[in-house]
Image 1 (cartoon, helix red, strand yellow):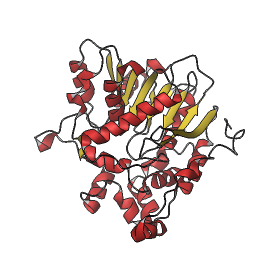
Image 2 (image 1 turned 180 degrees about the vertical axis):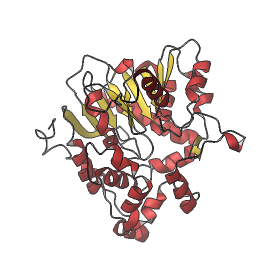
Image 3 (image 1 turned 90 degrees about the horizontal axis):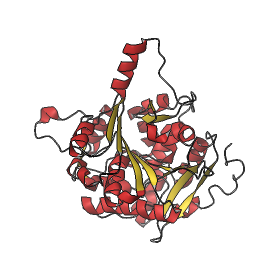
Length: 369
């Protein structure tokens, strides 16, 4: 299936290089308490990638500073068009794009990677200040691009990935043909009026009530053998969203193993956030710094908890640039009013390209068709 069958022996040859080594008595005890390892993450991810129909290549990309970025390239033979590069959100990894990889790589090469400090990529120590942590992420993306030999790209970021993709576009606009932001985190300034603050998801409020100011996902590591069950309890929606591919707990296992490892990118995210929904360095204060000729498309899911007014505010700050914001709730309502309740909502694999936004298939922006 894809290139998996033809390269099965060599697909993950470098994976064990990043197996974490215990340091000290506490670190050597915790792995036994936490039922996870990089090998287990590798195995569950392999089950996910087996769903791909298009040709693909999965490997580590070594950076000059010895860090390694786990990378999946789909449809590598389609080199005549600008490639699409997708950057996942907080706590995610390449496997969570599985619903969209085949459709979005039908006409162009698609690259996705585990951000530095997340998933199967290296987990270095990040700077503890918000600007330094953000710059470390952005520099790793640019160094990855250079190493991959990608002259320019359509850059798509989801949640934290949208924040970092925007920061990258400010610093390296000549490399970005189109910036696509899906439910981007960290854009608005935190309101001074508490009534204007959107309520975060229930699962997040539950985690915060347990851990307070600890790393955002520390609960998974503290819970030890009960950690996998917590993922299923707090995020039962994941099983529903990926039901077309998996009837079991494959996705929950993947999310657990991505985040039960020693925290790295998670710690950097903590340095960058004022609270989970707000960035210490809000992107709306800097979005005007992106070069005017870089087009931006912003997409919001029907059930997003991200402030959807951000798109309109970006338009106001970039009056002489292309900015389009797409709200799935509005799109579906208009379709309902025009066609009626019998009109089926498009699904991934229906023969059209779609983009997953907060777990809901979206019509793909024209720049990807």
